[in-house]
Length: 79
Image 1 (cartoon, helix red, strand yellow):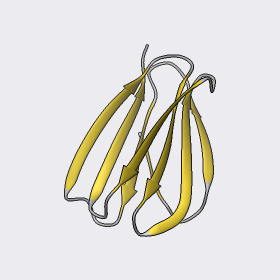
Image 2 (cartoon, one colour):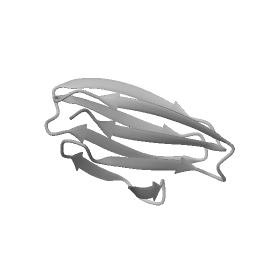
Image 3 (cartoon, helix red, strand yellow):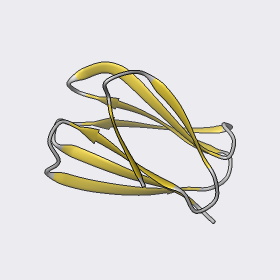
Image 4 (spheres, one colour):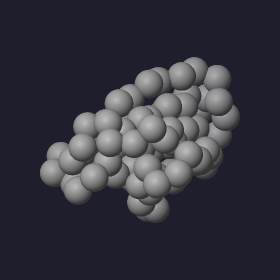
């Protein structure tokens, strides 16, 4: 599993069974989400104007998530 902070805007495409962690500041709370093929997450962090987009194989159905400082989001692509 790779870990990414909100240092820059990026787009990440996951394949079946892969996962990624997004960190907003220092980790205090961990949230998890599992995407189905075609779903993607648009994540923002309260402390940063940058956006990270993570898709599961393709980008068709959007889910928006706003992380607060101290949160980590683990995103997994459904196998």
